[in-house]
Amino acid sequence: MVCTGNICRSPMGEVVLRHKLAEAGVDGVEVTSSGTGGWHVGDRMDPRAAAALRRRGYDGTAHRAQQYERFWERDLVLAMDSGHLDTLARYGVAARLFARDDVPDPYYGEDAGFDEVLAHIEKAADQWVDRLRDQA
Image (cartoon, rainbow, N blue to C red):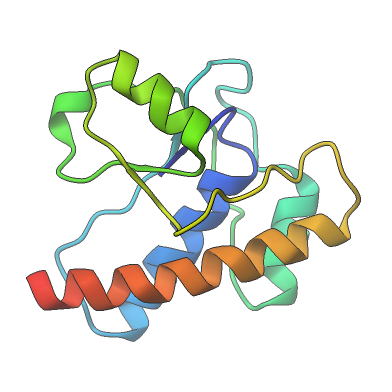
């Protein structure tokens, strides 16, 4: 999962997809997240993102932001929005959108925006679980 700074959308996606894959009994899928930039490398997840996850029963406390590197080591790269998709394409990475529509960036908005983004991510994660289960 890739977003801009790896403190909101992509780590939320990582936590949710990993949780849903485990619930579905899909083994052998490693889920990671990172940002297109290195501004937040080493930082914890945005507290509003972590709080939204907690409210829905997920644990994002282990997350530390990282910048996207080593493109060639990933079988599937999922971008949170079309801007990230374009950035990854410039790096020569054949990525796909995580959700049918761009996952909006909640960073500059109110706390409730993180809950809305999480609902968007959960829906998309369910679809990826079905796809990955069929490939396993």
